[in-house]
Amino acid sequence: MTHTDRTTHTSPSPFVFRAAGPSDGAAVWRLVQATGALEPNTPYCYLLLVTDFGDTCLVAEQDGEVVGVVLGYHPPREPETAFVWQIGVMPALRGRGLGLRMLQAWMALPANAHCEWVTATVAEDNPASRALFGRLAATHQTRCEVLPHFLADQFPHEHPAEPLYRIGPLARGVPAHA
Image 1: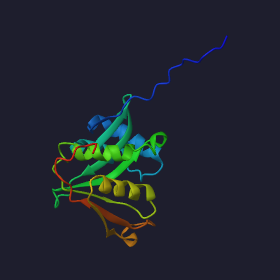
Image 2 (image 1 turned 180 degrees about the vertical axis):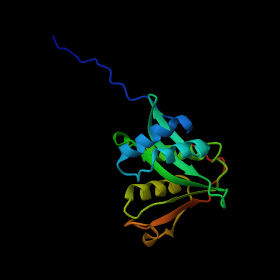
Image 3 (image 1 turned 180 degrees about the horizontal axis):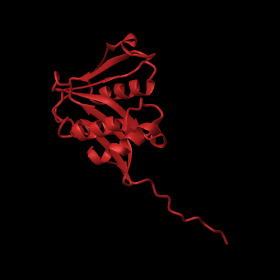
Image 4 (image 1 turned 90 degrees about the horizontal axis):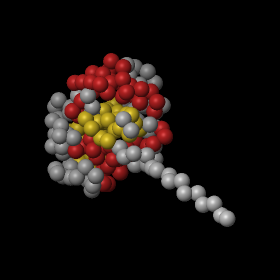
């Protein structure tokens, strides 16, 4: 008699994308620490961001846990621009397209949906983020300009330059998961 393994292997639950809020501050800070790739800031900084700029920040949840984040805002002199300050994904979920999915959902947030441009500064030693913003531009069939922005000598300590990635113009009404 032959035994057949009929165990059902279930995939993880789907991701839930939503605007951030004050209750997300500690979880966002912990996620940033866990990535090992982002420059960590104080817990207070993250609490401020998700409280005062929560409408322009996104968290990705899986099974009720924050597993990804896009922290951003609209530069005061550029209301048609959504600036990505930090984007992070838990290490176990990297390489699965979650970063691009989060950016798409972030762009579709009501506070960001009107924006014609997405910008971010990306250090030259960060190939993953450079590729991510290139994929975002390709997905939206638009340009990704790389312009000088923060130079290495502007930082108070050794830090690579962070050029500005400027993606757009974006067509309004583009679906979040184009």
